[in-house]
Image (cartoon, rainbow, N blue to C red):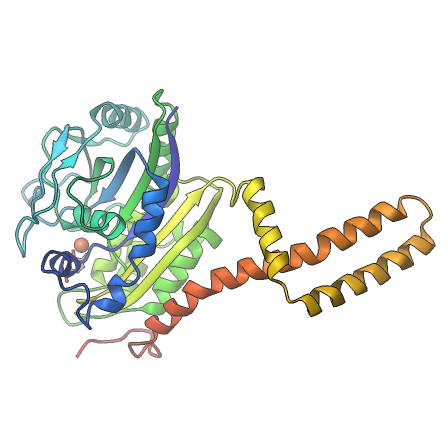
Length: 374
Ligand code: DHB
Ligand code: FE
C-alpha cells in the first residue's frame, strides 16, 4: 500500500532558480540561503521517496488568465519545464506517475474536489525550484512527480482550510492505492512576500516563524487563517502559503519536524524550507541508541551526582516501602539520568539549526512587524 511519509514546505522564488542555473550559489548574497539546502538534500537522499505530490502554483506559464482552474492535477507520464521571466529552466523533464495521479483525481472528485484533469501540463519554477532545493542539481529527478496546481494568482483563491481538506483527501487516496509506494507531499510558495504595489518587498518574519512553528505545534490555528490575514500580514503573494496547508492536511496528526531553514531576503521574499516526517519520532531502536549516546556524552561528574541523588531517593524509598524496592532503585538509577540526558541532547540538537535560523531572520531589521524594502 502507498504511504505518505513526509511533507515539505518550500519557497519557490524564481531568482533562487536563476542563482542555481547561473552557478551563483556561493555568491556572498546567495551563500547564506544556499547553505541551508545541503541538509535538506541529505535528508532526501536518505529518505528516497518513490513519488512526490507537489502542490504548487503556475505563474502564467502553463495556465493563463484565460482559463483558471482552482485545482488542477497533472496525470501525464511527463511534464516539460516551462517558465516566464528567465524562461524555461534547463532542468530534467519531470516524470509523472499516471496510475497514482488518476487514482488521486478519481478519489478527489468523488470526495467533492472537482479537479481539472490536465493531460498536458508544463511545470514552472513553482514546481522545479523546490525540487532543486531538495535534490540539488541532478541529471535526472530521483522520484516521480504528481503536480497539483492551485490557483493563487487571481481571486477568488481557495482558503487555507479548503486546501487542508483537499490534503486530507490526498492522504485518503494515497492510502487506498495498492502499490507499495513511499510518497512525500510538497507545498510550495511563500513565505511572506509581496512583489507589486506600494508594499512591494514587505517581509514579516514574525508571521512566518509562527506559521513554521505551528505546522507541528498548532496546525489547527493555521486552518483558521483567512485570505485577509494572509494578505495583510504576509503580503499579497504570501497567500501562496495556502498550498502548504494542502501539504500539511495530507500528513495527518502524527507529524514531527526534522529540518528547517529560513532566510531573509531571497530576492523580495522570505525563503524557507521545512521538512516534516509522519509517524513516530524515532524507532525504539534508534531511541535506545540515542539514549545510550546521550548517557555517554553526559559529563561524568554530573552523571555521578545525578546517580547519587537518585540513589539516595531510592534508598529512602527502600526504607519506607518494603516490597519491590530493589527494582525501583534499579529503575530509577538506570532510567532517570539517561532520560534527562537524552532529552537534553535532543534539545541541544534541535536548538542548533534554530540558532542559525534566528540569527538569519534578524539579519534584516526584524523589529518592525512589517519591513518595507527601500
Ligand atoms: C517572486 C515570484 C514568485 O512566484 C514568488 O513566489 C516569489 C518571488 C519574484 O518574482 O521575486
Ligand atoms: Fe510564486
